[in-house]
Amino acid sequence: MRVLVTGGAGYVGSVVSALLLAEGHEVIVVDDLSTGHADAVPPGAVFHQMSVAALDPVLGDWDVDAVMHFAAKSLVGESVQEPAMYWRNNVVGTVALLDSMRAHGVPRIVFSSTAAVYGQAEQQPIEESAPTRPTNPYGATKLAVDMALTNYAQAYGMTAVSLRYFNVAGAYETADGLRFGERHAVETHLIPNALASAAGEGEAMSLFGTDYPTPDGTCVRDYIHVVDLAAAHVSALAAGEPGEHHILNLGSGSGSSVREVLSAVAAVTQRDVPVVEAPRRAGDPAVLVASHEQATRILGWRPQRDLEAMVSDAWQFFLASRA
Ligand code: UFG
View (tube, rainbow, N blue to C red):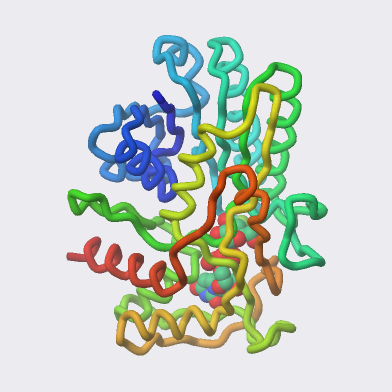
């Protein structure tokens, strides 16, 4: 297939682009590089530095079979400070993209959604039918797009798949030894912060909250390897029928506490991980664990890589990026 990947210079978008190329698809990446990196676009992809909002005049010429839409603002804290930027980028931009797809007859979209749409879920593991009560504008904008996709699929005969990610981690190494991973200018995620702490970069890492109602008092999350996640995206290209919108959680189905992740980081790196215990971070739910039964049913997908593989691959990427 010929696939347009928006946000293909970002973390998940670059790994999915690399995997699509490895599996023989053609890839066109569009990214405005507001948070992505030009050198994260895999060789073999055609790259256009432009925003999603500017796509309409050119989309018809590209003759793509599907869009994979990753381009979005994705920092929870920033979304609370600047909701307008989130609604404009994530919702207005996506509606414009959907209208361009309709105008130019692009029949299929795979959308990068998030567990943040569920907020503080009462039941674990979380199924797609759970109530959606996002606790921040980031989650609200992703939910708004999920709802738009349901409507657009039904009314205009598009085929849509929303993939709701839990905690993505790890990195991808191609057969040629190229590595694609996480390198955010503002890093808020646990595993990269713990690796930096183990490497002695900056201050000791803050552990946010030790008094949660969990077995060891720290938050429990469902970590999923970015390569498993990317494989689900490739499968999603062939899923569903015109008029259908599938919404699928992508997680491992089991939870790890922050302390368990820190132990895995210490074991993989063979170093101490300096940590300072700090108060809870605003908006963090105690437990988020996915049910991925729907993804298994619709995509035939099962995650294959465990927490140790995620930490180990993220560490190799971290070391290579500092070499
Ligand atoms: N944490 C720390 N110290 C850090 C970073 C994180 O203790 O330096 C803790 C957090 O408090 C949380 C856990 O580690 O308990 C995981 O935090 P992350 O920031 O790595 O991930 P989140 O679970 O907060 O975020 C994920 C996705 C978001 C999504 C959110 C939905 O990355 O995109 O789930 O709740 F919005």
